[in-house]
Length: 205
Image 1 (cartoon, helix red, strand yellow):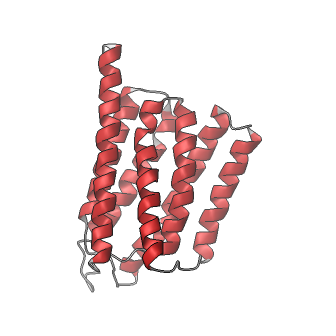
Image 2 (cartoon, rainbow, N blue to C red; image 1 turned 120 degrees about the vertical axis):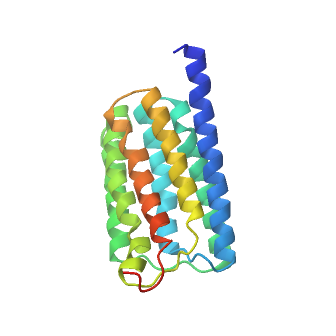
């Protein structure tokens, strides 16, 4: 593939995925205002930290700004929507599970610090963060396991999932190594699961 053409494709994939995240965040916020969705605000507080750390560690892991377009845009809009949540409602307290997520994230950051914020440390950090991100989704899954649900609008979650498929395509096109795969694959499945569960009605399982 021509290098200039590949550069254009990677940038377009990143921008389209980023705009999809923008749309998804805005749609989700609309659903919160309408009472369709009820975000666990402690989870979103953790996501601000997780997303920011994920963005920088993913960028350093790949050492390629084109592959970091999506996590950058995603983090910016996540912070914006979180601010809107906080402005209207108080934050919920962190529970034991949230503290585990926070502890894992801090450990990931300390590991990166130990490696003096180099690429090797960033790779370890980003991989550990995927575990933290997976655990942080538990409040959404728990709503269905306990047969109550506060997520009736699946659309934003599937838009998020589609964006991560584009991110995965960009990673495969500009192959750096297997360590770049966990982030888009992990987030694709996590958002897809919430989207699928959003179709469920109370008492379905």
